[in-house]
Image (cartoon, rainbow over all chains, first blue to last red; front, side):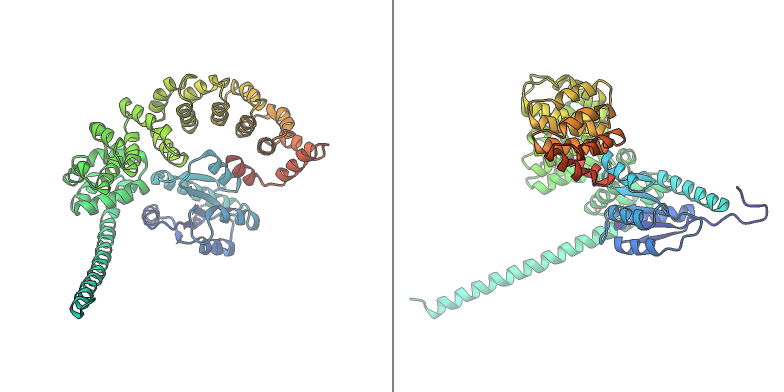
Length: 143
Length: 356
């Protein structure tokens, strides 16, 4: 259902990015600023897990770009914790150095909506983020 | 015996040695810090233009110019660090074409004959990023280098190219390496799976030496090439159990109807290692029609076969998981214990343990 005429479109959900890789973090920062999506960057698993567990959730599902290689708590453990404590709350994209089928299936079964092997195509990721952001905002308009 | 003068001389020499060691340490520390800062500065200089190229599709010549402005060593290290981290293989290929004949690239590549292995290592590393078809001869020579580190990185460089001679040379090298190195080599070869599979197929014959054949079967599995794996499937009746183990393992990547009867035959093999790998493969392929055979295999005398069969049933799910739960209440104590152990695992744990 689209908003009534004259009413503003629902705001886009925030994007939470969790990666300890400085170069990757800077590239994602640059790319997200180009597509004008609101975002927040975290460098440790502990910090991002605290944030996600305490984040107030409205009708929009926040999008999480989650690197598996994180200090403190790794990405797989974060996925499992979120699956138990906040199931189906976030749209999670996992970033991993491994592209094995089993690793991808593991991420998806644990609740991720996508799995990208590094190095990934940044343009494809940005297109996916924009798409999910729009879908999430539209669903919020329906709810 | 010892004169005072002799002792003073010895003391002075010792002091000189200590001072020179300390000085050398300090100089080395300073040099490492300087190089590190130089590289960080180079990365900071190159990153913005690289981001523009990757994200905004700006002209790649801007990246070339940014690298040209840096000292050769800094250009090489920043490229090595950023290109492999941030750019996909296709983008790296585009960058390679633009960079190959840059003066700083040529300067680094001139060190290919250096007596110092780390200089030759840098050459191989650079070729693994910017190497082109014209570098086949140089890469071939680095593949035969006396340093294992240089050979390993040269393999990566060889895997970038599709020249049959280099691919054959790379495949000849695989059997001599340890498992961890082979895994690295397979990942490198995977960039040109079709060309590698074409070179692999003629090697997958029953007459091939066992050690080499096992490595090539593993390569076919790692590539997940249907053509190569069909050749592997035809080897399923190989007389050596060690080969059949590798065949069963590789066939988990060939999801075709013809694979099922082969794996069921291997599930009944006289060697427990073959039976275990066949069970694992059936689980990976999620062949529900193998549930009956796997439920029987959970009662196998070998622990590892029981374990793999139970994991396979759990991984297949549906009626197979029902069959596993049926074993839990069965009369075979060892099968019952294994079924209880596995049926309590989460889906993610089943997958993870199946792949180990």
